[in-house]
Length: 254
Image (tube, rainbow, N blue to C red; front, top):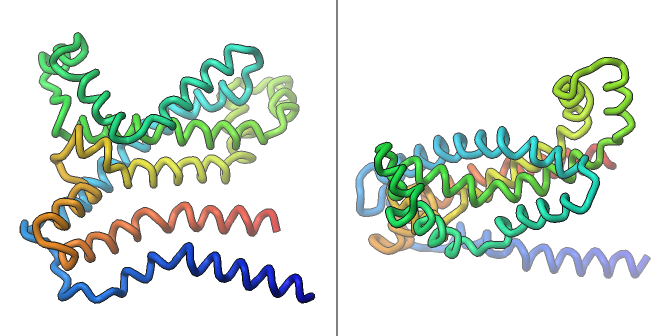
């Protein structure tokens, strides 16, 4: 009994220390300024982040789900190679990713020159913003989605196939319903990763400014009073989805 109380006290102390930074939301920083030094900047940053991040995540889901399924079901040594490639994208530091993207798609490369001829700006554009977010979040989605799909018993898929279902129908009617919560968690991880990306985006797409970059601009130009309103919105758009999915998972397993 005493041991249980000691464990709870230790967990409570750790939790308080872990969540203490949230107390900064109540710190006195002066009267909050909605738009910093640039009128309309906060609303614009919110629109840019939500719209372009949604597009990036849609691309990640469409391109990444088949890859996750392949990695979950593929047997053989080559799977290790593909998984290692995915992990490289996860482990690449954000600032390094931004610099590498700016070089790989810059005018000095064949692809960069092709993009210029097509009229697609490889930097400081909506296309650059979305592409950077896709590169920053795709690996996280694939790793989490692979785990969710791998948890579905393969025998169920094989039985459905023997009953005459096409592979796409097997995924839609068997794999997806059983893996949906894990896939939702994968989406939420990718969403937070893309929405919060700063190190790579500030190199490739300083404009149009999303919320992380605009928070930095507000901090530099007008200080903390201009940061707080956008910081609140940033947290409200980033935290609830993964938090709720985690609670749902815990409730299902309880």
